[in-house]
Image 1 (cartoon, helix red, strand yellow):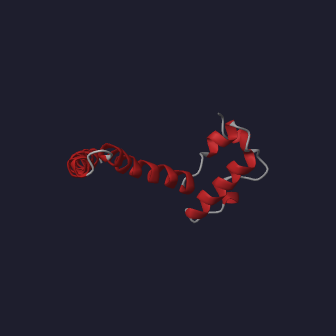
Image 2: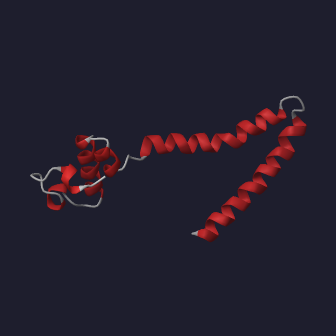
Image 3: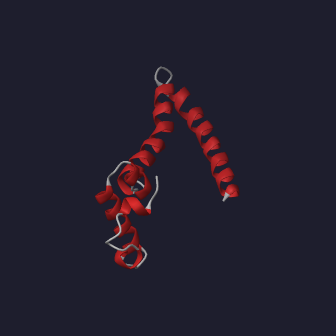
Length: 101
């Protein structure tokens, strides 16, 4: 994993240099602005994807006393793993007693 991260960061650095070499001389007045926007765009896409497709952790939700949301996320996680939450987490035990923040 570390080799892959190192390789991708090296490729990203080379790509950003190439992008700067192309954008800044092409647009002499506003080239640096276009370059900054082009470099920031992947970060905005990643942040939007994270907000749309990732859940808060059940432990965090329990620490915020959002027990219904935490149970819903645990149900979704169990369903993705082909299990039922009732098999893993008895309904009669309160969720806040099972996860200690």
